[in-house]
Image 1 (cartoon, rainbow, N blue to C red):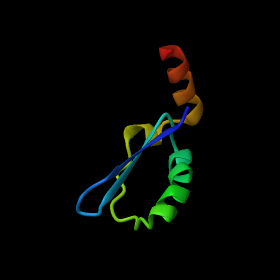
Image 2: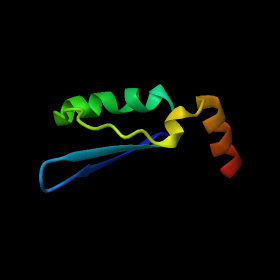
Image 3: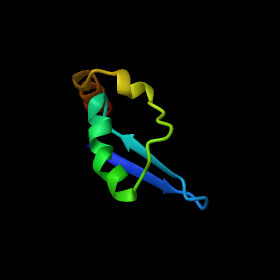
Image 4: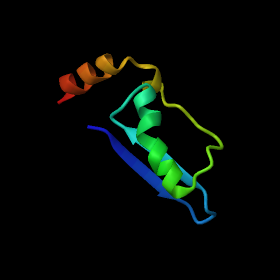
Length: 65
């Protein structure tokens, strides 16, 4: 299951972290939230999971359950 962790800092900056997703689905998952927050995509830090094949990531999650 995909989850989104949003951190709003006192200085007005925001951090959106996706958990349980990989590849382009991470970016698609956050796109609407970024728009609603008025987030300017300044620096995007991609986690190692981004490079994983979505089917591979799903198999790993199922094996860990």
